[in-house]
Amino acid sequence: MSTNIKFAVLPGDGIGPEVMKVALEVLDVVAKKFDFTMDYKWADVGGAAIDNHGKALPESTVELCRCSDAILFGSIGGPKWESLPPNEQPERAALLPLRKIFQLFANVRPGLLYAEIADASPLRRERIPNGIDIVCIRELTGGIYFGQPKSTVTLENGEKQAIDTMVYKTSEIERIAQVAIDTARGRGRKVCSVDKANVLETSVLWRKTVADYFKKNAPDIALTNLYVDNAAMQLVRDPNQFDVLFTENMFGDILSDEMSVVCGSLGMMASASLGLGVNSHGLRFGLYEPAGGSAPDIAGKGIANPCAQILSAALMLRHSFGMEEAASAIEKAVKAAVTGGTRTGDIAFGGASVGTREMAEAIVAKL
Ligand code: IPM
Ligand code: MN
Image (cartoon, rainbow, N blue to C red; front, side, top):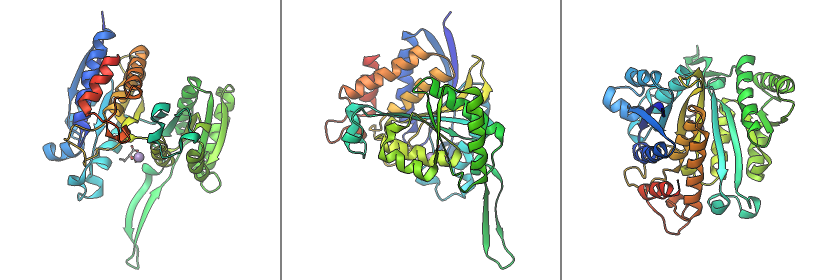
């Protein structure tokens, strides 16, 4: 009997729905080829959910996710909802609660640039002759994003004061350290842990906890440490000095964006947010999304690069469904299509560029 995979499809806003549509078509072909069946349902999230249900993360969407083994996510937000109060906006009112509800503590962002499209990177080709192949592991449910107190108060003299709190517990650091270790074991066995231990208490704890944990559990992995300011600099100077870049929530937010621009196009960047929960396949529940945004400027034109969405689907097959063969077949097909010359505008460098659908069809042809 073939395996059935059950996931929630949350396309969101902007280019989300159009790249999701073709990603599911690619998955359909992959499912036939690798003999599995799919059971997925769509639900609104973000701006689309505000318009249709009055809030960015309706209970019905959460419920669908609860009944699923993974979430395939598009992108959310856009100018239409930017004037809402900050805590009602799509990003804060949908993505952050989803991370918290499903305890998606581990964000995995591959920083991959094929040598053939190295011109997409702002770095000179001689700095990255073989492209780039690194991965960022970011803690996703702790730190300053979620720490309490978090508030804005009016002081006695009438001026306002805002507070965010950065908090980490050893258990939170250890569980993400294990993800960095597992990731490094499938690659170059090098982890660079990034913190600000010269200033922050949370970073002092981070560095000590990581050092102890690696010593005890991963003597086979080469661990180094960098302060975040230095890491930001090293990432543009020589990205390939890293294998696994490993850091806390906010530093990871910033460094992973830096990494994605160094790696060329956001249109190529997939990501996985892995949960604590085990799904019905005995694997991690996860949310899989392109690292780029909803790109409202090109939405509806049929020109968005679907590769990040398709590669996110590959990550879902790997991490939540254990389908390594199907996942790497997708990754190889994307690489073959792009390096073979089929490219959307973001990676065409003035050469011929194709639309979303043609890009997806070229990928299917390489499967
Ligand atoms: C990301 C995004 C989110 C974050 C925003 C949209 C809340 O920038 O996934 O990196 O800051 O984590
Ligand atoms: Mn970000």
